Image (cartoon, one colour):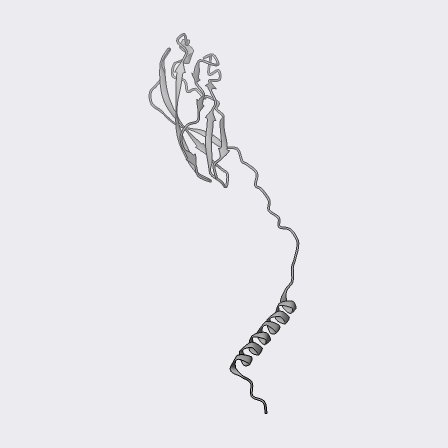
Length: 149
């Protein structure tokens, strides 16, 4: 009986492992192809609502008022601007008697589903009529928002 040296045994053993690994690799390898799919959401319009006013207006006077901007979206937004506002006619007081200037790039991000308050300035026209006494003025405003994710 012929005796196998240790060196030959190691070489034969290594060759056997490589051969078995090659067969296993060939038996278990595969590839696949296809595609994934995702859907984007749509944006929902924000809502602006009044919160408070600092002082009562009189002809030629300005005061600050606070509005709340609500973000109904599932992602955070930043307010890019809030439009200028001009009052509607109220009980004989002329339209445009109270105005507020536009605001660009107010600070802050509004989280998804959250709200933020913004302070604006309103001014009553210097020649407002007596019909404007003791009135509440609504200033239609529009906020422009963009995603901030």
